[in-house]
Length: 282
Image 1 (cartoon, rainbow, N blue to C red):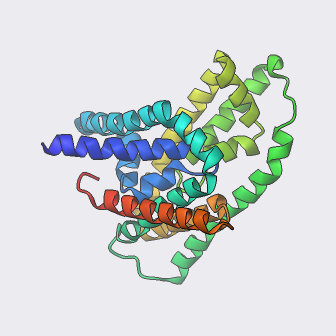
Image 2 (image 1 turned 135 degrees about the horizontal axis):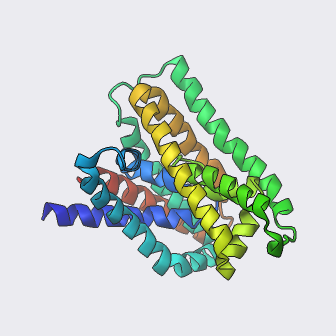
């Protein structure tokens, strides 16, 4: 019974993380933190190959998380496209609520979270990273939209996709940073979108290899930081999370009904996130 309850909770949390990954500018890592599965996710990825005793435990956890994410993306991507097109403000307010509702558990994640100068600096640095990348990403979108010579992907171009995939993979597990932004900054976003639509295997394979390597390397770096300097790391993560509001805040609706609708979505997201983060089986 306990396993089934944990499976259901992990499946739902994985679904929310999966949906976050298909929304431009929203970080799946942020939702992993606020839903209370981030530390466990980092441990499972970082220790997967070296801890044989717990490997099946890691497999069980990762399968349930990624199954929820994959199924949500596959079955709900059309719904999310509809919501983003016709109910954009309310959808973004819902995800803002999801982020806000998970912040208190993050603050309580470590026993020593007293405010100190070094921790404030780590918090500010986290905010600067996200806001800086967001501003730079917006400036790069127009240049990325230019025509790309898709049929002229030589070895050098494939190497660039591999490198971009590496850093995009790392961004996927860093709260507050969207992998799609990294692809935009690297000038590879349009190429990857084209590759997905046309099932071009060479760029997709390079992207997959780079992404997998990025996830493994960055998960190890984050794990070391959480082990050696946990308080600074959590303050840095809080900065990344709070700066996410800058990226996804759509502005207040002018229509009163739309405003109430958005506020309701925000409250709903806050309640769901806080509730999920408190349920046993994190």
